[in-house]
Length: 158
Image (tube, rainbow, N blue to C red; front, side, top):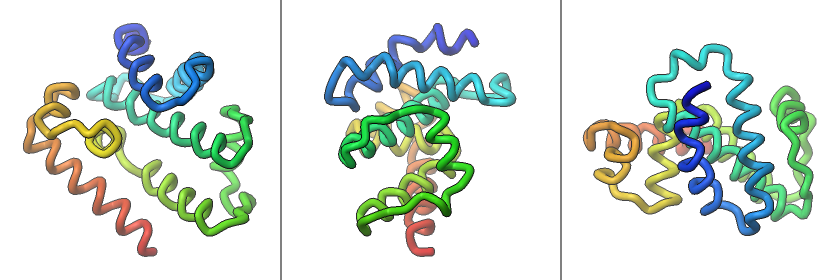
């Protein structure tokens, strides 16, 4: 997995901007690596950095959501268990249910679209900056952004 070594610095910076405590960074990076190891056909990934950003975005979101809920447990086996049995996950408040719906919608996005959406909405980058970072055209970034937002909105309306 050469991509992991090639983009290690970017991954650390990406996650560092998303967690309050730098002590959690090592655990989050490790979680991203574990999820990358589970990918069946990693060689078919066209844009490894976008794919890594997509996974890292999910990892950071899940971690921050658990911290807000007061649960500091962050283990890939727990994440997999909830993903395998979503009907068994109970939510006390409507807000947690909404967060889960948004998380599910984001999880369904292609890694390239997720990376564009995260860089645009969380990082506040322009389409030109995202295009330069991900090696895409500005037109493609705009297209991916519109597609990602439309998917999330449609998922929430169901």
